[in-house]
Image 1 (cartoon, rainbow, N blue to C red):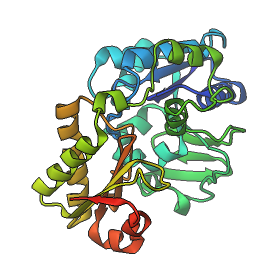
Image 2: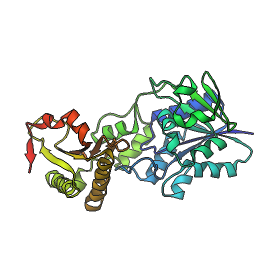
Image 3: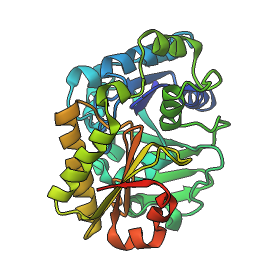
Image 4: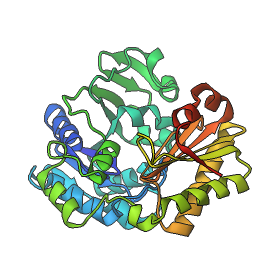
Length: 332
């Protein structure tokens, strides 16, 4: 009987934090083999501008090519296409390895969202969980501090191991890691900042060779026209108090900024989702990054030289962002 790990993610791009997590788990917990599996599309995340699934698979293969036979970069989810559900991948690997123990490796952010996953209860009947921390992260210290989903399944909580009623376990592992995220790396790459210490050399070379994570400016063209398109679209969807600013005459992190409100967090999310779809249809681009779409209090849609802020209206009153742009030019 072998111990087989499963480590999935977007890997957009794969970085030294990913490599460190997988190699540390393999070494400390004695896993015989780890499948590293780039997702076709994470069902809990929205598409953003960046690498194709095939490019992410190639970059991930390059990141792990020198680490030995204990690591396999598996393209099963990309071949399957569509939204990538972990339960489907687990069932596939279980069929291929019926006598082996499976261990799902995930970060603490994913662990906290685990109850939202498809067939989450079935997952903890089939696999053990290994939860790794980012730098400075704190793990639960008792049953009461676990995410609500897990509490009914706990039979024993001892130090860094939780035993479950499903006969599986959760083990917490602290990493010595570099503080970096894929989102931060994409921003650095688009602005030509140094990423040498965050990316394996082969991955960095591949990104440069294939011009991945370039600014979307050439696709958008005239950003003032683009801002007016977004302004008109949000007005057409009954957003509240839509205002757009040309900030090129002042010091600001972007050239144009747009702010709008929804009547509820659900309305704010709907406005942002519809805007993203409209821009994709009109300009052929997704945002460079997207924040706050799950909560809906403040959704930030980053199109490079235009950043769109969609607030739940009460939250907007709290932050008063317009005051930061009062010396810019408001677009009518």
